[in-house]
Length: 218
Image: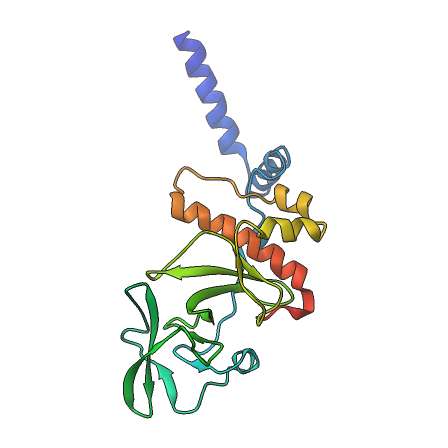
């Protein structure tokens, strides 16, 4: 048995040493072709992007956000842009040189950007991170500076935002259910709950962007 194992290892080593880079690529391609559909996340999933604008701006309207046109004399406070108190949400702004708190409930602006330039929409007193904007919109609710993994969607960027597991229903209605299921990302051994949820979210963003077509806001 020992001699057989030694011979086997030597044979494997010889084969590995004999492979040229082109041969190794060919072998890898053959191995990938044998993987079951959906076993790996398609490259498109890693390319999911959300709307980005200049950081720390306040936008009066959706159209102003698209144009990256900020409200005159008002910027978001970069030190503490967003705050929660007693179940109320605030945006801290600097207006004409003075810092003040503006409660999101009853806010007269469409949204704002955080310090990284991520677009945030304000609706009925709450802040929603925008992941896909267009004919169909996909958001995640900001909760104590962390996104809530529940789905939030709307029929357009100024329409009512509704919560619930509705993103997959929208994708199915667009005739993309089969493609969506095949694109389910593989959970790698190094994925924790948060990182895997990010993969699942990015898959939804890719398909919403596909549904939106020319209406998609970049």
